[in-house]
Structures are given as structure tokens and as C-alpha cells.
Amino acid sequence: MNPTHLTEALDVLVPEILALAKAPGMNIALGIDDRVVWAKGYGHADLATGRPMTPETVGPTGSDAKPYTATAVLQLLDRGLIGLDDPINDHLGGLRVTNPHGGREITLRDLLTHRSGLGSDFAFSDRVPPIALGDLLQKILAEGRTDAYGGSVLPLWVTPVGAHYQYSNVGIGLIGYLVERLNPDGVSFSEWLQGNLFAPLGMASTCFPPAQHPDHVPADLLDRRSTGYATLDGFQFRLPQIHAGLYPAGGALTTPSDHARFLLAIAGGGRLGDVSILTNTTAEAMVSPQAGRGPDPDNTIGYVWNVFQYGSPNYHIGHGGEYMWGWNQVSRVWPERQIAVTASVNQWDLGDLGSSERPSHLAGRLMLNVVDAWVHGADPRPLRSEAAARSYLAGVIVGDRLTARLGITAAPTGFDLDAIVAASSVAAGTPWDAAAFRSGIGDVAAADGTLAGMKKLMGQNLPAHHLAVVQRQLGVPFLGNMVSGK
Image: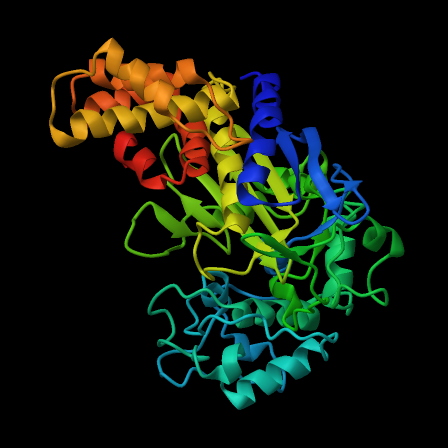
């Protein structure tokens, strides 16, 4: 695999992805074996000043920091200070956690696999820095409700312990509190991460503060932080700072290059070069299936990490996160290939909460598609320019509607194609290539009229990772799924 082919592809496609998602900027880092081999920023870290997004731009991780928190408690596991199947109440002092739906005691394993019975929440956030973690957890458990809309939408407890996967920030907050209580140095959660994860791995631009506030974050990191934007179609808002009360669930700040070093350490069995952050046994268990995440048997969870297609050539792990109201981060690791990629986008789209199609998720996912194609041996560089790709796909859609969609086997004549091209109206600023458009119509007309034929045609002209971008540029996401057989 030639990393240059990947970086050339990203140089072409990331600007298109940002324009599609209406996102200000993205910075990315790629790691192979035990080093970061490439990092780059695209677009803007701040729109008002024109400050560019660079590899050194700092961004909030959101929930992509959960693997940091999991690693911290697993370091205590490696030291014999807690067991995976220990009831957490044995280690929480005066804090008691009782699932009202009954069943056995909650264990550390339950928290690491989101199977404690706790429901989803928004990390009990506020516009002011939070109270002490233990005090906040005590308050949450005593009140017995979640945060959204005064607890009227999502219950704090949803199932008995171990019944099924349910993502919970409260559960990760409890892990952070265990780290704070049990670490042998008697330091805070933030200090333990700094001394036992970030410093050893050389992550000099990373911190995990109780609040993203000048009282807790080095001035240099705050100065380099991107400006986050909350977006709706046509709007970009710069909203007041939000502080996650349950900060171990997602309050870290980092750069992609720093985070990639952590990802490579996880891929390397808990080691990066001469530095060990976990034992090999623990690190391998962290990225191996420990429980299911739903009906698809290929989608499982390790210890916090999402694990996909374990045991197959497509095996990879991943996580991601958003930080209110302006940032999104994604990460993916191929442990057996020792490859990792991560990216930060300074956008949170305010529409369609919970939908992975919203732009703040979409930008990162489309970027990951490009990297995934490269990891699996493809040359990810686009076969067509932006104008030619869009116009060709538009031609394919027109050709499909004139022939295969209606079961018509007669191909449009050359005169028909000339007439269609001549009568086409293209909005100002829309990329357009008349020859590619005509070619798309003609190629469909010459195909066999079946979905299998469409799939073959599209694969030859717009490989899946590029098609995923172009189909959304044209507003037809279903087409790509149809012709790719998904």
C-alpha cells in the first residue's frame, strides 16, 4: 500500500466532503505501525478570523475520549486494584449504585460494555463548569432521572443488569470515578491520565480536564482549539461553551496526531515503541468482542471500543464522539494491519439528533470510506474529476429512468442523447461535464438492464468510496446502496 495514493485521494475528496457537509474544517492523522506518517488540516479552524485548520489545531474529542477512560481503569486492572467482575459498589465508598429493575450487582465489565442497565443521557452538561464528579454522580443517582427535558424523555434505568447494550455516559462517568478513587497515586482522574497515558505516549497536545476552561486547560491548548460551529442548513452558529458534567465520558482535548499515537498503542497490543500502557492480554481483550451491540452479529463491543467483523479480513475497531455544540471526532483502527486514522471536524449539526446521516457524522464517515478502501488494497484516487463524477452519475440516473427502471430495453438514439444534453439546464456554480453526462446515459443504455449490471457499471466508473460522496452531492443516497448490493 502506498500512503501517497491515500493522501492524494484525501486532498481531492476532503474539500468536496466539507463543502457537502457545510463543515468549516477537518484535520486528519494517519498512523502506521508505531508512528504517525501523515497529518493535515483542511478548511478553517475559525471562520471569523480565517485561521486555517492545521495538524496542530486542537479539538474536543467528545465520546472519542471514552477509550482513554477505559484504558485508565484497565491500567488499574493490570495492577490488581480492581477486577472485571468485581461489584462496583465494593469500590465506590459511600456512593451506592442499585439498578431498580433488579438482578445482580453491576460490575466493571458491565460498565465497559454498556450493559449496566443505565439508559442514554447527554452527560449532564451545563453552561458552567461541573461540581466534583463524585458529588454529581451522587446527585444523579439520588434523583433517579436523566437530563434531557428534565428527565421526561429518557429514563435513567432501562433494563436489568446485563440484559442488553445501552450506551450510557453515566456508566462511563462511574468508571472515571473508580479511576479517581482507586489509582495508587491518589491523584485526580485528569492527573492519572496525564501521567500514565498522555505523557508516556508523547501526547503533548492532549489533556482530559474536568472542564474546558482556562482554570483547567493550558493556555496554549485553548489558543489552538478550533472554533466549534452549530449548523442548520444555511446557518452556522457559534454558541456558548458547554461543559460536560460527566466529563470522563467525553471531555478531552487533543490533536489527531496525538490521538493517532494512542490508537497505534491500542493496535500494538498496549505498546507504542518502548512504551507500554497496558498488558498485551488486557489490550487484546479491549478490542475483542465481549458482548453484542444489537441484532447484527458482526457489530460487537469490546471494552468501550466498537468491534466490527472480528475474525474476518475486514476486522476493525472504532469510536467517535461529538462535543456540544460544535465538534465531531471519528477514529478507526485495523489492529491486525497496525493502521489507524482519526479526524476532527469543527461542526455539530443541530438537525436530526441521533441520525448518522446528519452532516457532523457524515463528513467523518465519508472520509473513513476513503481510508478503508485504501486499507483493503484499492487505489482510492478518484477516477473522475468532481464535475465529471457528478455529471456521469446524473447521466446514469437519467439513463436508468429512461430504460432499466421502466423495463424498457430500447436504448436512446444518438439524437435523443443530443437533445437531452442540449435541453439540460445547469445552475450557476454546479460542476458540469456534458460529455460525462452523455456517457452516463449511454453506458446504462448499453448495459443489460439488471441491478447486477448497474453494480458492475458503477464499480468500474465510481468506486464505492467515491460514489458515497457523489451520490450525496446529488441528493440520492439510496442509489449507491441499490447498485452496490447493500
